[in-house]
Length: 101
Image 1: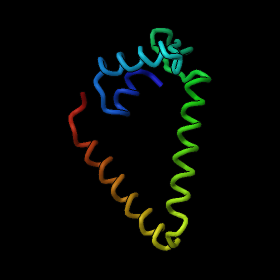
Image 2: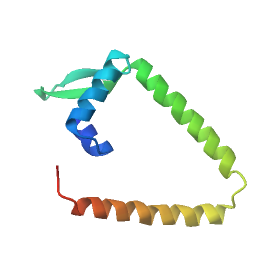
Image 3: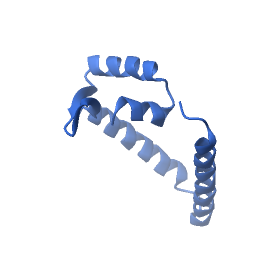
């Protein structure tokens, strides 16, 4: 992912992303590399250490959600899923109306 794509994805300014990426790089969680198709572009990649943090965090969240939702009936989960799909699409539609940075 490029820093610009990350900026768009998380809604931070380019300067803020540069700062965060620098700190993550210094901590050994991400590394900068060149795009093989365009060496002028910077590509951000997780290091093994960064990937492990993501995997551990994701596993913890997944386990917690599984325990939390274990007693919720399937039909209630299906209704919630449909509701969240509508909300996410609404947010995407709204974001598309905003002026680009």
